[in-house]
Image 1 (cartoon, protein in one colour):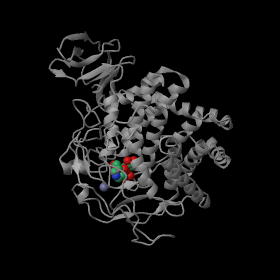
Image 2 (spheres, helix red, strand yellow):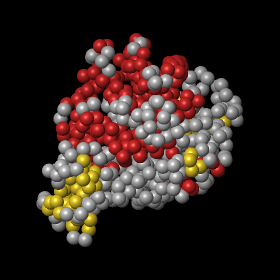
Image 3 (cartoon, protein in one colour):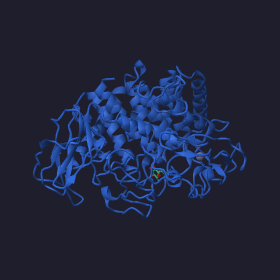
Length: 538
Ligand code: 9MR
Ligand code: ZN
């Protein structure tokens, strides 16, 4: 089992042998010349009934393509080089363009083609304090969330937040022209163009009084057809304080990031963030307008039988994120006061749609404002506490896994835990954190129990049957999609349940283990790009 994209020159390089103790041979891919015989350590480590042995070829630094063989068996080819992941993160980033809703897609690169979809988005699902049921609510555009065609604020917010954070840390990584999207050539970074497509949609989801509608989808799950043939009415579901908080955070962040390149958008985002914040102030208690039946054609993205995390029962994390981003963007005292009230008692958690707070804590930690001097050491020690627990897990797990909660979306959790490890490396300079973060990339790109790369189109043995209605109905194999991964509860009735890390199936109807979602890709892009920045010293 190898990372099928490859390994970085300066970092440890290991493959895993599954249920075998024969020494493998490292070959050069081009001419099958033998490079080295690897040493197999005894005894193996055991997990889920498998014996796992780690073989190392860390000394090898010659740039090139290689593979491992063992008798008649051979591993997928992999690269060794200074940075073998540029192509991977480009594919992952480009996937957002292919998820665009409300426009025709004629993509030369992949061949993906469909007419403009969901041009009627949307109408108000239920009467509320301001809008009547059935009233038109124009909210075209944005990205389809996942394998289905819904559009949801919670995952949109974490995705945009993660991508804008990458831009803030690595502004040169996705310059104009890099992604080959329709806006390429407009003189602005492609990352900002792509993210703007989602921001414009998010802005349309804000109600007149500042509150934000949670999601937009059909009342039933879409038929098996391309998006342009999904003609059922698309409904705009109730407002909530958690979504309004996440929205305010992202808009404040966008106001800062787009200030130089797109003044008008930046100002609109700041106004929207303030308006959302104002509504939150007027509505101090958590509130989610949700009715039975609202999730009959779309995901809930809220507390449920499936999603029981504590953070879903409070909007504190969202209010903290909103106040924190608004403070960093404006420097205004009222936001600081909320940060000072909430942050000292906020744990450093996993950044995901369930809990938006970790990113803002990291941002506050990096922000030079003197008024945060007392807060910074608190955040730092919480972050390092979490990182050391993660590190422990990595070292105890035969696959060097940072996340061993095998639930829906476990792969993106693995990537996000890896990001926390990288933050710990940035704070301490201790390389064990960076190496453990790289281990998460290795796991996701093939060094796992299945020996498959969980990103479509990456490596010789990638996931093949992503749960993705668009792929199924255009007959396309779309590259650059990270799938959810092992999920012990495998709620789809297709993948096997109860097997922990082995509860996964590369099957296009396994929506609980093999679906792609926009927030999954963002987590892995974040991990790869932040890992890259630690090597480049930028
Ligand atoms: O990624 C989401 C995961 O964290 C939740 O546990 C799961 C069930 O609520 O939903 C996942 O998101 C799905 C959404 O509900 C509907 N569209 C597809 C998403 C990816 O599977
Ligand atoms: Zn659409």
